[in-house]
Amino acid sequence: MTVIGCSGSFPGPQSPASCYLVQADDEAGRTWSILLDLGNGALGVLQRHLALDEIDAVLLSHLHPDHCLDVCGLYVTRKYSPARADGGRLPVHGPHGVERRMAEAYGGEEGSALARQLDYREWEARQPVRIGPFTVTPIPVNHPVEAYGLRVEADGQVLAYSGDTDSCPELSELFTAATLALADSAFVDGRDETRDIHLTGSRAAAAAVEAGGVQRLMLTHIPSWNDPEVCRAQAAAVWAGEVELAEPERTYPL
Ligand SMILES: [Zn+2]
Ligand SMILES: [Zn+2]
Image (cartoon, rainbow, N blue to C red):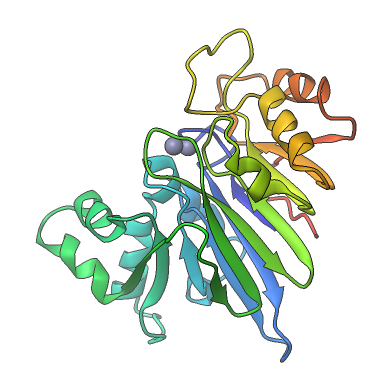
């Protein structure tokens, strides 16, 4: 898993908004590349890590701009790049209404043309999707819009990505026995009192503890106005192991 962007809610000076490149080989040795979210700013940094026509699918946790807006730019590359490969339509999985949302984001008459390059598919809660060696299960989570945590399994390893969420029972389902729980930690205990939007470090850690069997806990979606070490310390008060912080452009083998 390579962190393309991990800045919470908007791009920061050191990182785009949310985007994680996840790669695994199938039995024939072909490497599959999927993106968990494609937030604003991510498309630029992504090109330092793979050619854009090597993407096999885009998986959107929800339709806030910091998780989906660069789908518009990806469409442009598939439609207009002189070097574009004719690989057919690219699967873009997302919540209900994803096609309309992206058309509106692009705007104008061309908005509706995105579907000629992008094969939109709507998540159904807990219905696994197979993409090459990956099995991805969307688990509904607790955010002001339809939002999913994505449980990504391949080769016996489990990456459990919370997307944006506050505490909810479904996080146990999402995180249980995960190799790596990648958890929203945008809010800070003692500062952000609004509930049902984001986790804090301590709530992320509590969810991982309650889920059981989580091997690694990594905090992400930290906005640039947070001190990441405060988030880490709040999680470390609950999580017995090391609390990792997602770092842009770092690759984490699972
Ligand atoms: Zn967000
Ligand atoms: Zn959000």
